[in-house]
Each structure stands twice: as structure tokens, then as C-alpha cells.
Amino acid sequence: QVQLDESGGGLVQAGGSLRLSCAASGRTFSRYDVGWFRQVPGKEREFVAAISRSGGGTGHADSVKGRFTISRDHARNTVYLQMNSLKPEDTAVYYCAAADSALFNSRVRFTITEYDYWGRGTQVTVSS
Image (cartoon, rainbow, N blue to C red):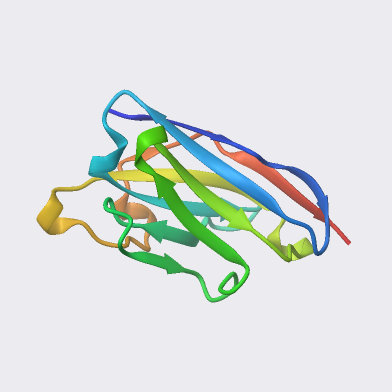
């Protein structure tokens, strides 16, 4: 199993930046495809960005393309979400998720059901 711990959330003004971190413990993080999702009260959890286990493949939701960037550092067992040009509609709890992936099956995963492990989330609030 792997345990995920998100950090880096907070309150920021519109146009500002934050960098979220997803730190893993328990197993080698490099064997996992990883994704970021977000959720606001009363709405479904939605895909934000994802990265394959090697880091060679990435994907971003249309709503964040050009503003958010997902990356990973294997040496630090951490996946990052760099968020620039933040908007009030980016306000949500952001969750990190991981899927144990064999090398031949590794891919960018866009849906909630593809992930096996979830963190507890970190709140991001963007003021106008």
C-alpha cells in the first residue's frame, strides 16, 4: 500500500500561484500513476491533472490547461501541481490519487475509478 499526504493549499488572491505537493510513503512511488482531482461541496469530484509512473505522460483538464502543470520527482517520492493564474472558480479541496501500475499498463488516468489510493485533500481558496 501507499499513503498519500497533500500539502501546499491555502488562501490566495485571484491571479496568484500555489504549488501543491503529494508526498508518498509506504511503497516506491515510482510504480504509481498519479492524478489530482478537486471537489467543491455539492458537486462531484472532477479531474484536474494526471501523470504516468515514468513522468513521460501527462494530461490536464481543459479548464486548467495553460495554467496548471503536473510534475513528479522520483527522488523525493513526490508529485506536484503548480497552479498559476488562479481564479475564484479554482476554489476546492484538491485530492491526490495513485494507481498501482505495471510498466506495460502505465498511462495517464482521467477517471476516479482508475485510482486505488487517495489522500485526505488540501483546501485551496482563491479570493476575487
